[in-house]
Length: 434
Image (cartoon, rainbow, N blue to C red; front, top):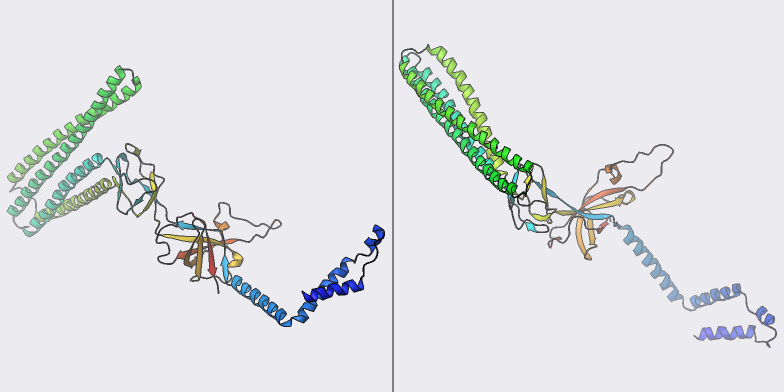
């Protein structure tokens, strides 16, 4: 303050006040701007000379602050082009059918555990298919077993006709058992056909009453009536199959009687062994095919229960009770919220010193919270290379654009314990590169 007063006094001595004249004279007496700036410069130099220690300290602080800021900024790379990523598991049907029930917990934004039954299809048709395949497999397995036993019997008693005759009797006995198994399978198909016809006939009667009330069209009634007639024809065919199966049982029993009567008419042992081996091989192949069909039928029956493969939150649910679905039709999506990571798109100029394992601080825009993780991997190509139309830089129209490379960042264990980070959220990662 004292120095400032002294300067004002000196200025007053150098430029004393004069009597006020014309306005033009007053204007010409004002000092020019250059002189004012020069005075300020001299004033600053005077203050520096008066306080040299303060000036040195100020310059030192500025240098240290600038160096610290430069070191800090050069030790990190950050971007706001980043988001949370995760797995999206589409849930679809593996077999066709009508939805019988939907788990009330399987709703949008609800959490489900792995192994939870999300929906169930009507299993009636698939249960009947399992029964039919099991009956066929039992019959063919018995036939194959009889053929193998026949080979063993003929080989062990090739010099005696009595042993051969006994093997033939045993084969005929097993054939009777196989035909009875086939009869049971035909009866099972008949039961299924009668059930389908009963359901179709009930629908026809209901549509007939609706037609009488003129609540439906004649074409709709005709369609249901045709369906009922079709199932009725199926019942008739199934009954014919049952009758044929019973006839085959009778024929098998007749063959058994004939085998018992042919004890003295057996062929030579070598020919019988060769024929029996061929028969056993064919019977074994048929039994294997029937076993595969049984396994397929059992799998299809198990697929009527649609089970959650992973734990997570449900989204985009579209399945409802009564809906007819087809194999591969998407019913919902499950998002595991405990398995997320960060995909950050850094500029290619930011990757000079970046490498896997470096520490990362992640700021979540949604709730102003910091997370910690590390660089897991750096993408094998820039993001533009995966676009629908990758760039093709032809000669003459090239414009250089800084590309971005996706970097995968994993969270440290326990960082997302509250599962607040969800796929798609925007984040700002900062990678420590030094």
